[in-house]
Length: 292
Image (cartoon, rainbow, N blue to C red):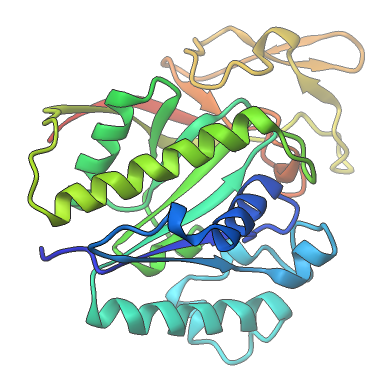
């Protein structure tokens, strides 16, 4: 693989996730912060109309609009579908002629700390993830196998990944998480600069990551109405082990509902506000180790 030629920092894919949006505005105001000698870096505000309205999206979730079948489908013509097509053809065309890294910035109401979500196991991305995990105690690595229903904006490039930061409420800024995200971006850019110059990076032989294994919905009645909440002792325990038989929900009548799985899992996106509409109370992951 040749040198990295450009980095795109995508912000506002969800218009009410302010951490990335305002960090991008800072970078546009002070562009020298993200420029490195060996490659170009620019900011892309992905969904400006949703940001102006302080909403996650206008018609549909932009970050679920990048499946190749959807991009090619002329019948899909909502605001976000058209936006996704424009972004896709712009960045995909650039990626044909250069090595391009796409960093898609998100924030979460769940206790995700600094989570890097990988959609591929490209060697460069794996080594970058291992490096960040080794130098930054807040960094967690997740791997999501791309499917038709989960092709995200960052999947446009083989060298794309997303960053989820939390916990932070929708439509607000949290200074501590803003600063942590900013520092993480600089660590990514510095790593790429060192890579382009052929400088030796600290070699990490193993990478611990969390692989998506499924989702769990809230308990519901026959009308589809939610009948329970995340169990109090599970709230904000993202990335901690969950064993069979341990409680995960508390119903409105005070009954605890236990996890019915057969093995230990590691839930993430616990009680994510944006996932209520998707029927997701938490995502389950398996903890794995990869030799790099």
